[in-house]
Amino acid sequence: MRISHEAIYQALYVQSRGALKRELVACLRTGRALRVPRARARKQPGGHVTSEVLISERPAEADDRAVPGHWEGDLIIGLDRSAVGTVVERSTRFTILVHLPRMPGYGTEPRVKNGPALAGYGAEAMRDALASRFTSMPEQLRRSLTWDRGKELAQHAQLTIDTGLAIYFADPHSPWQRGTNENTNGLLRQYFPKGTDLARWSRDEVEAIAAALNARPRKTLGWKTPAEALNEQLLLLQQGGVATTP
Image (cartoon, rainbow, N blue to C red; front, side, top):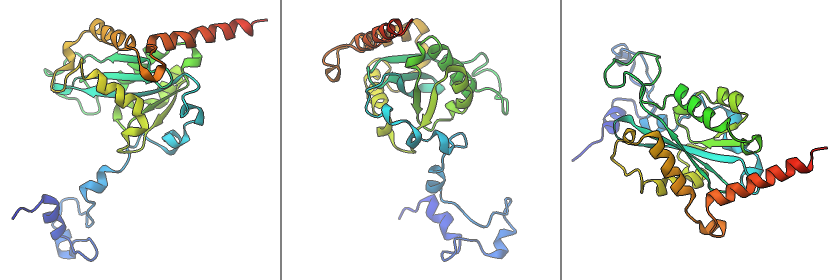
């Protein structure tokens, strides 16, 4: 017979109240008489996700894909804490890949408590990498970015200040709320196979992969490529700017 560790822990607690007997509480280092099952603890959102940035607060125009400038993002994770950031525009499916090299000292220097994450996709590194990509875009293409619950976007408030992007977070365990990004990540696994160290790809190589993906015709775009669809949107923005100039 096999018993899970969770069952053993629960057996130590009084089943009717979920609390330890008083005489046992004194023996605990933490003095915590109540236990929260691991499964329930995992469902609690990160502290960086507050009510005003939940996906339910995202404007309706982002859902119907009629207005460009709404993006979805995530990380593709590889071996040894390597990663590549992926950001996809919802209406054109245009993809931006964010090169996230490891920081100097990774693997050789001890981790500093409360220091920057040396893996390359800590909150500060992620904020700077995304800001450098989005600030080069026209303002009309910087409407919103929907991310998952990863702590790499813990500095989302500063990212909004730097770029003007409204940041939203999907609900826990709800990848379909970022379906465009999830589908794109599946396509990218052709180039970034699971179980590989993603740090082996240089910035130029990552950019070349993004260019190849954006040059692939899509049925959902009427067999146009994402690059062509985005270029059409840019031309419309330019024409609109000329038309409104006095």
